[in-house]
Length: 128
Image 1 (spheres, rainbow, N blue to C red):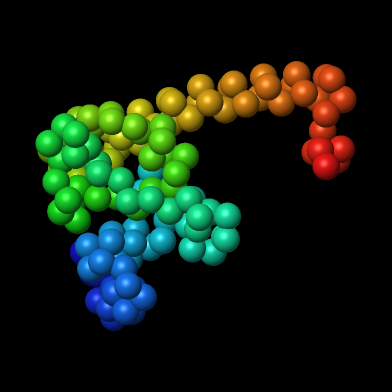
Image 2 (image 1 turned 180 degrees about the vertical axis):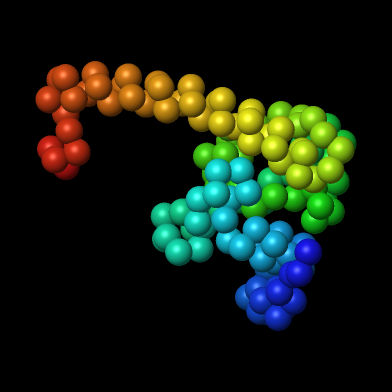
């Protein structure tokens, strides 16, 4: 992989650890699970997390190959899931499938709650 070392160096100057800078640059500032852009939206920026693809609690390391740039929603959905695979790409695909399923359930629940609130006269227009 062709990593932009000058960008990594700039991130390190901003007081990121070299490992986190490498992860951030490798992912091009996007969640490695859902693809959300974490650097061009202030709200998304606040959700930046560094995830252990294989959880530390299950023997995962702190090496950059085991770290993924993640949004908070995906990291929370993944929790301590142990992905299956040999390569980093296989592990990410396994984790993405798990996260997608978990987020699907959360989206369904959100829609049900939103519908109930709308039926009772609560909407974004009168939420203040």
